[in-house]
Image 1 (cartoon, rainbow, N blue to C red):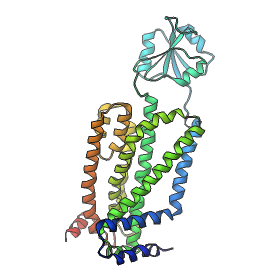
Image 2 (cartoon, rainbow, N blue to C red):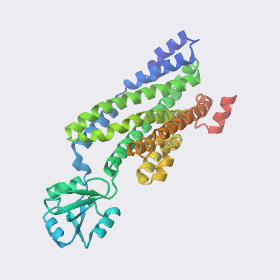
Image 3 (cartoon, rainbow, N blue to C red):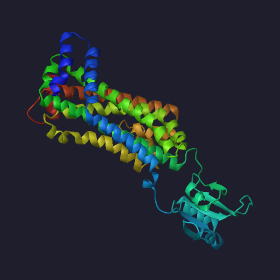
Image 4 (tube, rainbow, N blue to C red):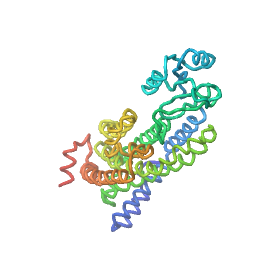
Amino acid sequence: MSVETQLRPAVEAGEEERGMSFAAATRLVAEREVKSFLQMKGFWIGLIVTVAGLFAMSVLPSVFGGGQPSVAAVGPEVSRGLAATELDVREVPDLAAAEELVRAEEVEAAVVPDTSGESATGVRVVALSDPPTEIMAALGTTPPVDLLDAADVSQSEQQLVIMVFSLLFVMFGMGGSAIAQSTVTEKQTRVVEILVATVPVRALLSGKIVGHTVLTVGQVIVIAAATPVALRLGGHEQLLDVILPALGWFIPFLCLGFVLLASMWAVAGSLVSRQEDLGSTMGLVMALVMGPYFAVMFFSDNAAVMSVLSYVPFSSAIAMPVRMFAGDALVWEALVSLGVLLGAIVLITLLASRIYSGSLLQTGGKVALAKAWRQAAD
């Protein structure tokens, strides 16, 4: 079925309502976008692959496993006691040296003699911020654990949340490229000329953003429903208690972040007339999707940088929910960040709307931004 055939019902409906309001035109375009993408095999294949990957990550955790856990052992007697385990043992002379290695994260934990008499095995475990479950399992006992830098949220839990949120942001952010591809297809097949004759150009842009936002929210719902099942099958029910508190902030940030990027994807598609040329205009948007991912992953341990990233519109969708989860930000800070993100959406959408209007009907090659801007003013 050709693109023009798919669009014909929407166009005919638009012709019948030539005097339709902006909201009605936006709804018409959004419905057409949703229906057309739900009919594509690629959309369903991508969703199935994502859900299958979620189950694979849960059921096959060994794929992501590392090497032997490293521990510092205080004194030769403790070292001999750990010789039968599969731990990477590093002997140190005293407790101070062991704590120094733990704080420097050169070892995951330290095993020290217990002088209080609390431990039945005569040893204690010293860790940085959360109990080293893998090391304690290797010991075969549950000795007392002393935390040097105890936190409400452990480092491993925070890293898990960062990884999940970052990957979801990248996945849905890059999914916005479908808007660019849809726009180029309409220009290449000249269907866009029929569309702009029946609905305002800005309504066409708004409809695309709304339609693809609905598709994104739908995918988020499917993944959210599949996650508890996958975690239970993999024996990781406790991780639900880690992820769920952060979702309340992440979902609105993710949806607003997608809207911010969606208008830019639409502009990327409107500046070219062939699918082959789309790569030349997608670089900036791709950088704005991948940049926050790498920034949060690299600077997750730097409180100052994370604080700045949580107010930058393109990175706040990841950074602020992570800070809220870790207890490093207050509610008013998250609300301010949401306000900044909303303001950025209004500004970027207005600028994108003008460029989109000036470039949508331009064919014959890549349209320069300056030319598109001037064309919209004429």
